[in-house]
Image 1 (cartoon, rainbow, N blue to C red):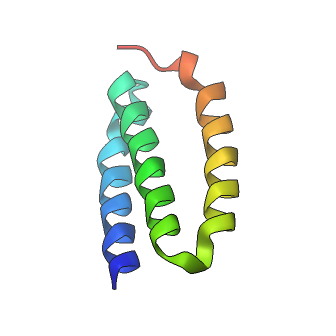
Image 2 (image 1 turned 60 degrees about the vertical axis):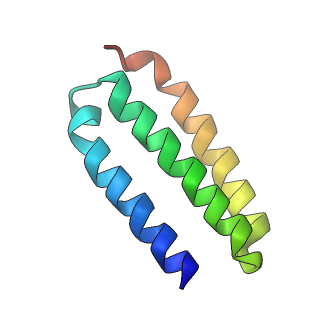
Image 3 (image 1 turned 135 degrees about the vertical axis):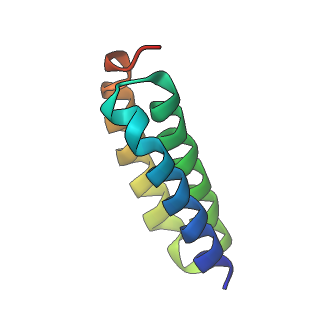
Length: 73
């Protein structure tokens, strides 16, 4: 039940971030980053996915920080 709630929160944050990502604003990038943090916390809370959550977060953050310079205010 908790993982479902966290998944919905992450989905809402990512949907809200889409317009900002298309406009290449820093706010859109920040929302995607915060969504990835919430997703990592959710995978740590649900004990079954700790390792996969950490690996997914590392890969996701690597890609996010590679494109960070493209997003300006």
